[in-house]
Image (cartoon, rainbow, N blue to C red; front, side, top):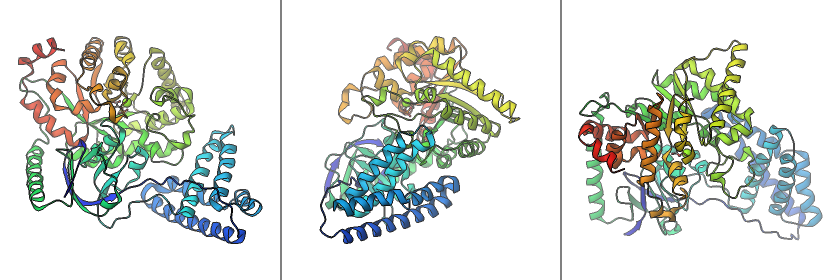
Length: 552
Ligand code: PEP
Ligand code: MG
């Protein structure tokens, strides 16, 4: 038995086989070829294979995500049939006697640069498509095409690290657990693992070893261990623990339908964070009182091009309808930093976490923002919608946002399109600046939601993506708790309510503190709702408040 040690980001126990997931990084080696005709036919068969793969992807996407989203694969098919693109590749092979990989890569660069330099934003976005199709062909030529998970049973994914865009593409039913060598607890991949409620470990040294591929293993997501080829004693111990977890879960399920009120009658709303319509099953199963954070950027991450107003409208309408009148807070897109989307064609930044991300993109490119707002307002008649804006740092941003919101409302009115008149508007408090001026921001807004993941990284100057940051990123740091206390005081003085939607909301060591501060709502991963409800039911705030506040 081999034991690996990692850090838990989602608890639970998983039994299954290891699947080493390696990202394709096709290194292109420039090589001269002796037989040009041979090379041309090698290219042609790779191109044909890519064409067939794209056809299969189109069929899969058509049944899973509808025609509008599936079309991208047809566009990709058209690209690899384009005369200019093919002529360029064939000329490089024939005239310079170069290998097909080099010819495709050079052509790809030329075409991608050409698209990127166009003024039209639709044409600009085609640069990412040329790259995508070219990488597919290069992958086939070099035998390093991106691995889909091709196991015939659900597996434990082991990887060096996973980007959010990779994680969202996995078929969730095929995954038992995630184990990564890199990563950090508040990275979006960890957040996704918690949302999927599967055991997940990060910072697991020496996990990516081809020798482990296919071997039976147990992930102990309570103690941060992976046992490869576990012995009998360990297997028995883990089976017992899994039974115990199941029993605890059954006890918690009895709390469905119970109000989240402390012993002395203080109410707190317990809501769920989601990134996808498919998470709603678990939201309802865990009896969330609403959705406190729908990370709408996942609609963009899962798409190959800007999702149209109608596509977004369909998603928001579905979430609102399924939540049947419970409040759904949809956050406008928070692209940037680790959540990169190729078709946005964002310039490279030295410091993307502090660069053009989230609301900054929306204010610089209002046409993208307005499309999302129109979709949100149109969907608002199907439930109880609230909208919130991420990464706010200044008052002028809110003023500008409200102006754009008013423009969208007037446009819809002049088109005779109905929308709800009771949409609450709020913003994330995830920069220290927003916390410090929360008294000013509160005058404009109905609610705040504190994003402790970013608030912690910016307050402590501790990169949330850096697994080495360890003790320098103390999530219980007084500075954070004092900021939360300050925001709640400022908000309540202005009739604005406050939730917490960062990962800290689910930290049960702080539930009593949040109740004492008077936080109105906690929005957490669905599986954390019932354990927190139990904690709330067991707490008498009046007996602890004074001491907790004095110690902040
Ligand atoms: C946060 O920063 O706490 C938050 C909820 O937003 P995200 O994790 O998506 O950046
Ligand atoms: Mg954030």
